[in-house]
Image 1: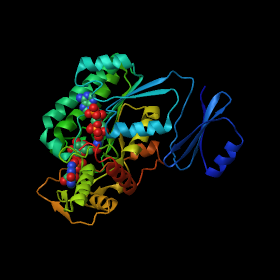
Image 2: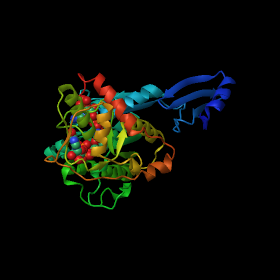
Image 3: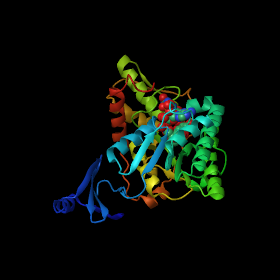
Image 4: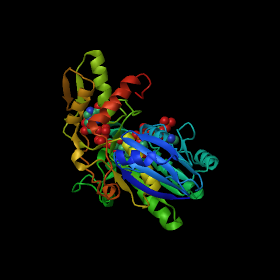
Length: 377
Ligand code: NAP
Ligand code: GFB
């Protein structure tokens, strides 16, 4: 049984098509649009309306996919859970792991767990992660812990003949002294920014491992390279977390305490931010349809790059904060910019619509206010 066809249609055409078929297999809403899955003869037809511009192929007769997500309880992992719960793809069992299931730096624990789960596909999200200030403080831990986790997961996936592994890199791993924008070919063209040297070098080795596992064993191991990610379930700890959750935490507390809101650094550095739920939808597409060993940058367009000062202003507006905004220039600015080109992604997904940053920030602030007591802080 196979997918007969996938076609974007206007809502009107969608309506009339559906009125003449009673074999609606499932209706799935995906934040920006509706997807109808209908059965036609021996196959499955997917009708999507033009809002989403992203389609998911589903097949019914194939062997069930067992997709294991390491790091399933963090910012990215919970973003994936959110979208998978929305889509609920047939014939796919998704298992989201945390460090409580196994410490991935421990080879035997990792092997025992993966042997028990028997994944057909692995999305290796887990890592020791942190913002600028944590990276600067624990360079050796970031290198050693991430090297161990990545080596264990890829070697055990090779042993178990896992069909596909997607690992996570980051745009901060690229060389610091380059001509922007960054593209996938530039990963090893010089040292990364010193602030995240340990993390960056461990992540670069994942790209090396994907290549050598493919050449020696034919493994289908690839990687994605997201820019700075944000969204619900982020780490709002001021020392360890990234800039957006850090700023949200500080505005929240400043509003509560009637104190000024302090942005660290000059506010001049530039960043591209991808919303965790957009990233999740792209990861699902990579799992299904991206068939290269070479990595792919997952980033909004270059023109969406924004300064720390301007993004702080969006957060001030989202909280309706009226207090004083200060800049503490005694704090590091880190890398001035890491402008990434998403040309490769756009060659595959020309119409993918990213959530506007103002809307993503609004949804994340609403989530943080509602979950302040339980959020990671
Ligand atoms: P996160 O929120 O810190 O989540 C990390 C996840 O990894 C958690 O589920 C954690 O489990 C798990 N984990 C950590 N240490 C582990 C260990 N020793 N054994 C097993 N599991 C372990 O991280 P994130 O922001 O979602 O990042 C996800 C991936 O994206 C990482 O590979 C990161 O390098 C990459 N990335 C992140 C960003 C960003 O801006 N956040 C940007 C680019 C790339 P527990 O919940 O049990 O602790
Ligand atoms: O997200 P972030 O910590 O890391 O952003 P990077 C740092 C930038 O935000 C710096 C400014 O320019 C900081 O001066 N900033 C302002 C703040 N206020 C705050 C705040 O309250 N908290 C934080 N954290 N920053 C990381 C890499 O680089 O990017 C990681 O170190 C990872 O390894 C991550 O790759 C995606 O964007 O500079």
